Image (cartoon, rainbow, N blue to C red):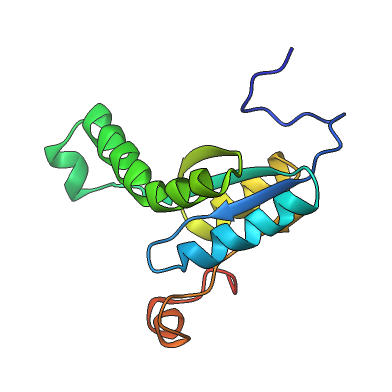
Length: 138
């Protein structure tokens, strides 16, 4: 028996990865996933990638405190999309990773065999993506 967080090779249900970032359009993403869910069974994985805290931060906080900060930030970041998916009846799993976002997302997609990665559009148009960088381009 595998744990719920491990990919199941024999499972025919497609895995959909949704990296969650502040500034992305949660409503669009939830509606898109609800449409996929209506069309057939899917397994949605919400992923929050937290930055690693090194150097100065580690001088003032121990490893456990930093991990608690990262976990709290991940929960806060995931909550709006969780609420939207709950309201639409779309099941999902939540995950947190620590590291460079593009690397963590790619690694997660490989490990969990996610043929599709869904990035919602930026709220407010193209400008935020240009200012803050484009994770999909990475």
